[in-house]
Length: 139
Image (tube, rainbow, N blue to C red; front, side, top):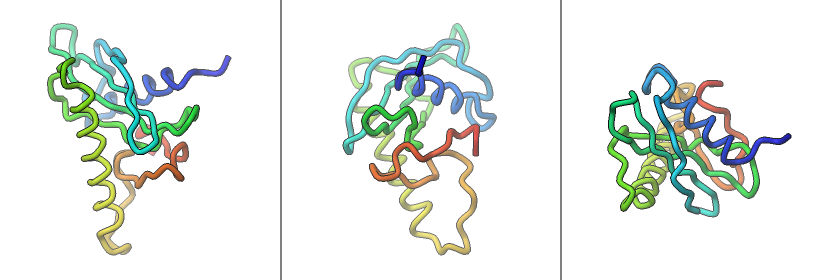
């Protein structure tokens, strides 16, 4: 049975949070609370807990083009509190920040200064490249 896009998004978000430069372990709890479309790509909103007793934090994963099971590398969290009322707005702002950062990081520096990306958000993304990026854990 082929996994769903939701399952791919959950796995990508969990892998990103587990990275040593992030939580360093899988979240104690994680839930997808919704999706939104931005720049013709689908994004998944997550709330997660670092530990069982900690507060819910906001994370986002995407962009997925169509029914693709591969995101374009926009997986991120600032580990700020999750607010149901502002989750879509907050997640959209995270995506736009990642897009802005990755554009500066990969395009504004001379090629000789560019380094291998440490995270998936360091990779440029456009609808044409959606589905071609590896998870952070694969970089």
